Image 1 (tube, rainbow, N blue to C red):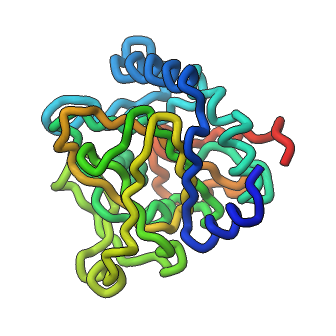
Image 2 (cartoon, protein in one colour):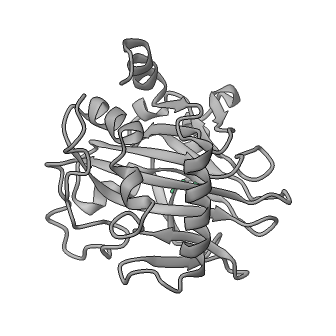
Length: 256
Ligand SMILES: O=C(O)CCC(=O)C(=O)O
């Protein structure tokens, strides 16, 4: 359970890091699972693997439903309880992925707000993500960077970037960044150790750099949505692997 200070820090910054939330044994299990996921030989059909233009795996989507340890982890007390507390209600997994950045080849995620595109998936903004570090996340290997407090800036103007990486991404237009992101000190590199977890708001501006280091950077992200916040009313919905349509309350067993 988070105390009042943790909750108000989360509310003010739009994110909170919990160091060492997962044990070394849990991290070992996740790392072994990551190798299997990335190999892809025994992935269930809902799992989608996206590769960098140069070949290595970039992301493995929708791994939370049927594969351990990912299925259990999103239901765990450590991650699910703070989510339930922040939301004030049960939550389902709206989106999940393992994001890998192979040494020298893992590429950028340009500045964006997740709700910049999720707003078009027919949900409201009651969504919170948990980023779990499987490797040390450093400045050099492309850790995520968050812009502190930017979850209160409204949704900035996004465009569809199909050039920069292999993954089509909604990104904030440079002119909109210039108008809003004027203080470099607001950019917080989310560096940390395996087992650290960062909880963040779906409206916070974030992105990450290329992996210039000899070390891999693997992190997984679960995006939780309030249980009654279902993707509806969209003419041409995105696929289930990116916008999950199985609203099972993964926090149902947790007491907060
Ligand atoms: O893994 C990363 O470096 C960034 C991921 C991200 O921004 C996202 O999934 O929205």
